[in-house]
Image (cartoon, rainbow over all chains, first blue to last red; front, side):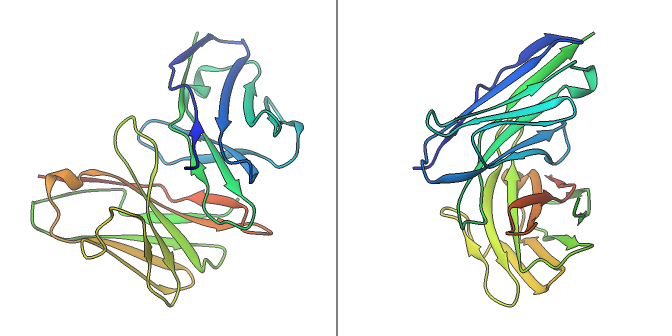
Amino acid sequence: QKEVEQNSGPLSVPEGAIASLNCTYSDRGSQSFFWYRQYSGKSPELIMSIYSNGDKEDGRFTAQLNKASQYVSLLIRDSQPSDSATYLCAVKRGGSYIPTFGRGTSLIVHP
Amino acid sequence: GAVVSQHPSWVICKSGTSVKIECRSLDFQATTMFWYRQFPKQSLMLMATSNEGSKATYEQGVEKDKFLINHASLTLSTLTVTSAHPEDSSFYICSAPTGLANEKLFFGSGTQLSVL
């Protein structure tokens, strides 16, 4: 069974710190990896995608992928209270439309 | 990014009534759309895959006669919760894949259903 594991948290970090969110997956056939942000009562919003090993940076966000370890992470630099949300990791096999979502990690950035 | 519009945002209904939720892709054509359900503090649960011009594909444990899906055009999919009961109260979200290889999933704004 394909699984995507995330620590549910909450992860609490002070404003300005780096928040590190982690995700592991079981399906070695996975080729596409995504991070979604979901505010309470809202639908998920795509913030990062990554397809190859290494780091991918977009503004304050950096996604890191290690396929050998089946591990994907999201770093948020200079965390802001507005970053407080649940972050969902999603993983997809090649040729599939349907990603598998983790349960999400709740992030709290306190002033 | 791509825009997926979902209506209504919230609905309150009496037990036994039916509720229709609409999902539209506004700036692209979506031959496939996905319907998810999410209970508080739980992950997204895929209910079904909606296919334009053909029958929807339901996930195991999802009653197709209770959750009717229609995908009549390339920009519109609807989910009808028939004879809703309080246990159907949940957050329903549609989504559509897009991008070069349909790699990315964009979500509608969601519908909070409360059945009294």
